[in-house]
Image 1 (cartoon, rainbow, N blue to C red):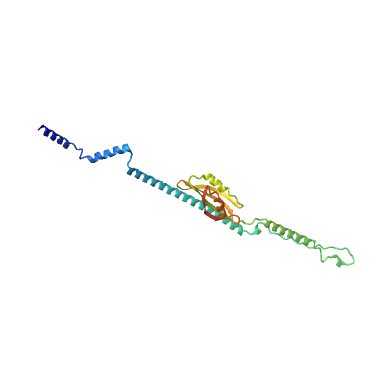
Image 2 (spheres, rainbow, N blue to C red):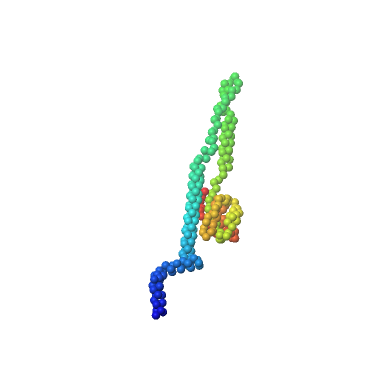
Length: 249
């Protein structure tokens, strides 16, 4: 009889407890405890990794947008400079050559003086009908000298040399390439009719940057093919060379 009473009291005790009705809350507390001890779960780490990848993708897209805007700005400035040069060349071509040299005026021909010969017997001998040709010869000589001086001055005028402005993209092998050494190699290429200009480093992606450099060449002396061939000889630093922009000056 006492044994049955003890079993009944145990059942009553369990009936009064509500732990089985709040099992979900206790399971959640247990999960939080183990996560605090062992770190976040695999699912949470994967979610965090995906979020980091999305952020990196957005950062790269912004970098490409900035690079695109920079290139548009450079092209716009080069077009404006080209238009100014073209306008100047047109004005020089329209201006007459005679504007630089004053017109040559022929020296006035003086009438030959009348030579009087003292001869009282014959009045017809007092007038020299033919006069002297010395004045005509002097005027002709002066005119010829001025013509020769104008021709000599015109021959010294330099001829118009055809030139082009080229924007090059020089790409390295990877992000560990020494870009300062790469630019030094590019500028070491020297030719008659080649002049190097400004340069800058432009991000490409994954930490890699390319060298964007401008140069002016004389069309009769330097071509893009030989220029690219000379630059790519530095194969330890340079992967490839591309022409980003080409404009006649």
